[in-house]
Length: 187
Image 1 (tube, rainbow, N blue to C red):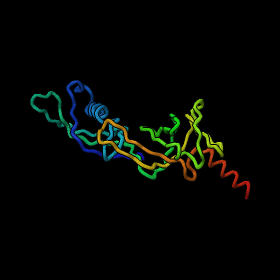
Image 2 (cartoon, one colour):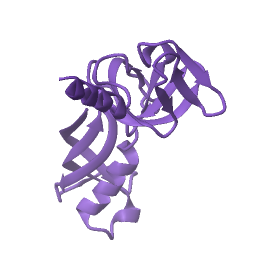
Image 3 (cartoon, helix red, strand yellow):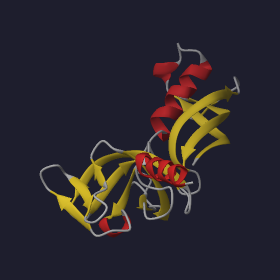
């Protein structure tokens, strides 16, 4: 889930950015400092925008930079348990698939892909249902439910997201669209 937070902070503007407009310099500093890091409460910081900076800064002895009170918006991605997400399969191995969810990748174990025994096709790098012949391969769009999220304590590490595709209307969109057509034909 993407969330926008409003944050108050003190931003350090180095002398090399004194020629730039204050908000632009602050945005550059804040983006370099925070974008891509994991905040334990907010999640993965994706973007910073709408920066307001107090023009009256402070100078600390021995430091040529200025320090300004600031307020800005943060766009963060924090996956939540039971949330339904959609992404592209970016990798398939004999034990599961990785799905790109935007700023991170989620993992679905082979037992969580479908209600069928799954066979891994090494050459196609695809998962194939033994009875249903349903296929999941790299490049497919899939819908999944978040089963668990493990947030790291270190801000440079990525969260671990476990996914399942074994519930109604999850998996490849073609699967449940075909099921709807069959139901309509039978009635």
